[in-house]
Each structure stands twice: as C-alpha cells, then as structure tokens.
Length: 179
Image 1 (cartoon, helix red, strand yellow):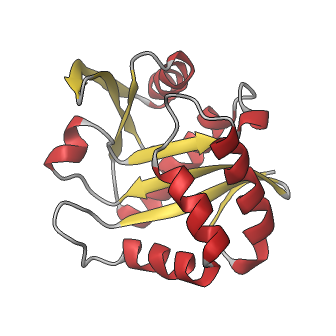
Image 2: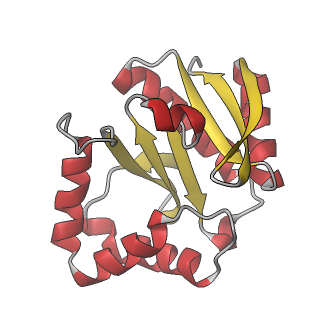
C-alpha cells in the first residue's frame, strides 16, 4: 500500500540507501538538495532530523518558507521524497512551487510520481488548508511534465505560461487538492 511517512530513525537505512541511489544516478532534473541531504544524513542523522523540524517552523531565514519533507513508501519499500512548501514567496511563484519530488531511479516509470502527488495534494489540503498547489518542472523533463499534467487533468487545474527561470524553461501547473 502506498503511503507518506515523516522521517524517523526507524526508516533511516532504507531512506539513506534510496537517496544514495538518486545521488549515484543523477539526471539534470534531480532535486539539488538530495545530494547534500544524503551526505548530511550519513554524517549526522540527528542533526538532519533537527534540520527538518526547523524547516517546518514558521520562523525561517529571509527568502525561505516553512516546508515539510515526507517520504513515499510502497508497503515497506522507500520510493521517493516529497518536499512541500507551506506557502509561496515571490521566487517560488516563478520556480519551485509548493511541491518538489524525487523518485529513486529503480522505481521510476512505474506511476509513483502521479500516485504520490495525489497523496501529497491530499496532505496539503488536510494539513495546510490549500485548495490548490503550484508545481513546476524543467520543460525538458518530459516524464515529470506528463505526471503533473495527468494529475492536473484528473483533479482539475490549469497550466501557467512557460517561462525562463535561471536559464531553464520552466513549465508549471496549478492543481486542485480535492479528492
């Protein structure tokens, strides 16, 4: 069964292995923070857990917003990571949006992005009160664009105009958080 879980010491080893798989099989579209996250988890797991708690806090350094990290599991298998920003600042309205995600390479092309996005959108509605969420991807990332578009068409939403952000063409969608 597919589920979202919060990071805990009990899932440390499988998460670390999954994130290392991402780091060792990089694509141009991977979340930049994953590489740092693997190294940080390996050096100081308790510090990593403290960091995630600080990320959820309403008090953030200038330019940052509170965020929650959730891990996607299929039964007892780690599948991927989702980072959920609680609200948008000006930069996140241009790139990044509410949700960033990464599926481990061995589990890609199996429908996990789409299924995970539906769970995350439900989480956003129930925990943040969001009626819709903004997502972006690099326009060259065809698989991510397909998943975002498919969820948008199924749940309702709209595309935002493509635009260039930091020398990359960004494609975005607003997706409703309804069931």
